[in-house]
Length: 149
Image (cartoon, rainbow, N blue to C red; front, side):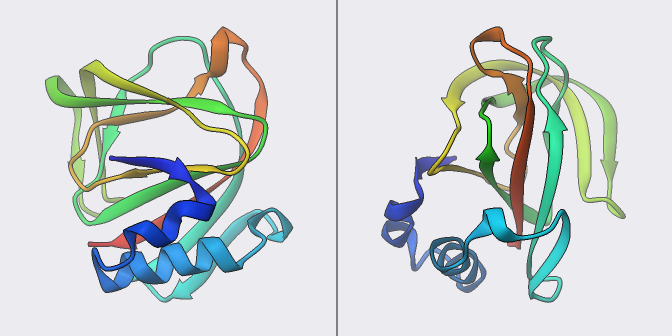
């Protein structure tokens, strides 16, 4: 997990070429100007999904990916994202075609996203985005940069 401000993303250059592309894109692009939908950065290696989503106050299930990092960025509104370290139960086994699985996990860390902040969810790292910040459900607009490991 990485949690920081967008202007500090340069600190993380050098982890991998694909993450470098994503961090540079994030720092150089006005993500809020992008239309909702998928935008290619480097084909299947790095792309961004821009979307509207409703935050939820209930716990929900944690997700995980095997092939991709997620870089979560709120463009309008804010959300909390929870991170865990170990699944107690896998409720939806990993599906390679969507690079996702789901499960129940004990929360280990909470990050409050919002304007100018980002969170990197590593492959296999349990994470639960879309949590209502301060328990207040709201409609948000966000970008998720998918980065092949």
